[in-house]
Image (cartoon, rainbow, N blue to C red; front, side, top):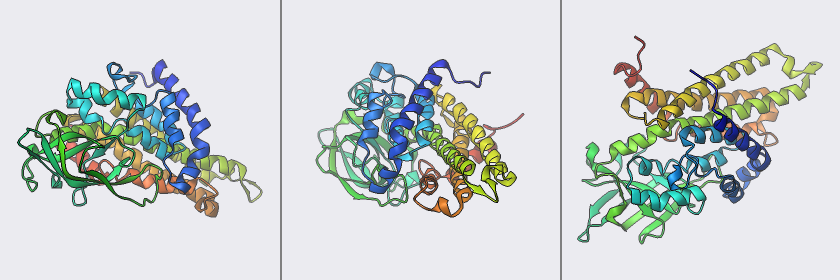
Length: 389
């Protein structure tokens, strides 16, 4: 058993680390202030070939998989979780297609994501249906031409304004049905008649990538844009399961960035006649966070490896959920402690700690809250998927 990244992954890590230091770090605060979409980040990722990390080579990607994307996101998130989210959006909407899409769908939509000529977004949540996925009411019904007509409102969609196409989940039975075979997934293109972007959210953090509503009013979707088969609730879950380590990587990177920032400050700031970094109490806080970061990384790299092996079905859920739960809760904890280490200075916009603090909280909510992850982990223990004899 080796705990080292392969030579290829180490090269990827070094490349993204330098790119992040050169092109992301000095822009993170400005992006947070303006809230404008950072096209320069996108173009930097495009030029470096990072938009296709998780996309197979046959569709124009590099085939680095979920582990490769997690490694890249960890490096980027040390400086900007907005930039990390941009990379995440190369996998979240494409995941269901890569799992169950047709060859024609993959050939049509995946190369554009890999080469940066198109962007996508993921439409699952609705105003009354966040964690309760079966509560979605967006409907899909067949018309006389054999195409699907979609009606509904999706919300909290990252990248909704920038996307060229969307992976949309809708009820193909009665919208009030809670049967798992009532939900299906569709590719819906931005220029479809009846589709519009609604209200954009005013967010606490992770600004720069717009989050908001997608409105579908009698949108006609060709029958060939159905992803997989009718009755795709399992596809939604498989897609989200495989995303857990990618979200976890955002948490690890943020925790690393916050701790590194605070540590450098403690080395430079003097109090009581010596650098704060010599205070034993502060050293202990640094040590405890460092250990938790390494634990989160081990959980996350294992989960990413499982996902790349196609192990994101029920029996692997507790391991995938553990990575997401632990790493994102750690991001909140680390950003809180880092801010506290700086004292009053950490609360001010003069320092990055308040930005880390605001960005961290999103991670414990998106793509399955911490409470959902705890439920899944507990179910894994009760079902003996996570067991020790």
